[in-house]
Image 1: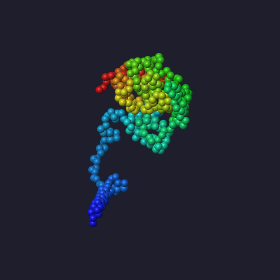
Image 2: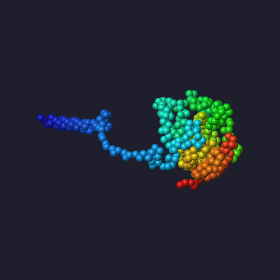
Image 3: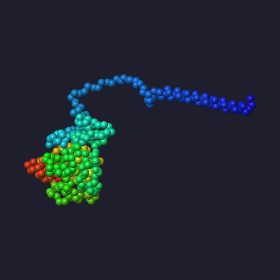
Image 4: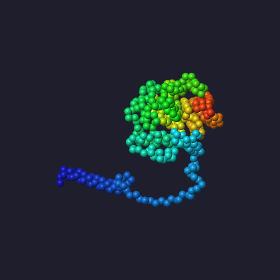
Length: 398
């Protein structure tokens, strides 16, 4: 064999050896993978589970004298005081459909299982049931916040967009902006006239008439010392220092509208008690907040400049719940913030014996404090009003 053929044979032998080693390596790698990962947890094939038996010591015998349901262990007394059902002082209330109220941290939802089951029965990704009354009844009983749902709420068939600002502030919205099935009235004309045509009680019965009493609330000269005007209240603070706040139970949000006209932003909490209050508020161009007076105020500590409430806070609220509520108002107000308690009402000696000491215990400074007779239902009922302007001290708890 010549030199040329010898040099050509060498690379041929090396190539064969290289491919032989490569084939052997790939076979070994395949064997390793198949044996290592065949029974691993990430396998797509279901693997049989090996049952294991563990021995657990039986629990110690229960003490029959200790009822864990009525006496939950290790719970702070204040939590028990807040979450306990409160008897309504004035008895059965048709809006609540109950004579009790359950201050919520979510747990009362479990008490009303039938209603909750109805509320949560719907087709996922479909339309929600037309159940505004059921939802509000659950909320007022303390099932607050309501569970979220995966369905779409009903909207008006021929929805009409709201008027533009500033026209919307004092205009009655279109009837086509509301789903009316939950209410006695089926249009705004009925709501505007119900204080003249309808017998019986309804919450804020004349509120929807923007050309009636709403037109003059909190402006102009006061009828009595109990009637504070917005401008008189704002005058106690440096101009521009009252900027944001909350109106608790603010009806159709006329207070918020008045404040907006003074470049102050007010959020209005309101329920839909036989009227589309939240829809009406939004149509006017201010912000509605659909929460009850039992709900912890959804604001951080020391943030709001002013909190106002007219008529809502009164002796119909269980006293411990009222105490919690006023402390919550104190919490969200910034130091120097104002609490305008507008026409709080009670009966006879309750003012001096119960409510004045309760309010004073919270720690506000008194700017104005006016007590007078509530005469609209007759003097024989001996009802009293309190209008107060209170200030959170600049130097308070640390």
